[in-house]
Amino acid sequence: MVDQVDANVTSARVAPDGLSVELTVSPLTQGHVHHLQSAGVKSKSGQPLWHPDAYYTLNEIPNP
Image (cartoon, rainbow, N blue to C red; front, top):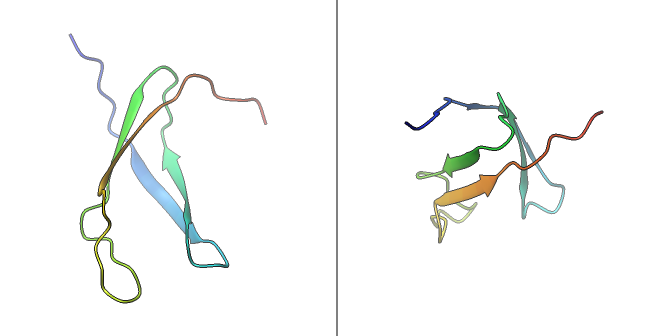
């Protein structure tokens, strides 16, 4: 059995240099592999991402 949780990007903030984006995702689930699908995201010049899928294993959620 696979324990799946649907998470959503709740906010996105572009860095001042325009080269990265900070995403807020909810809910974050410790011990899960988070899969981010970003098909359709393009650069200012209209170029698509080289890799529209990203995976991240959330091992620990730090206390604020």
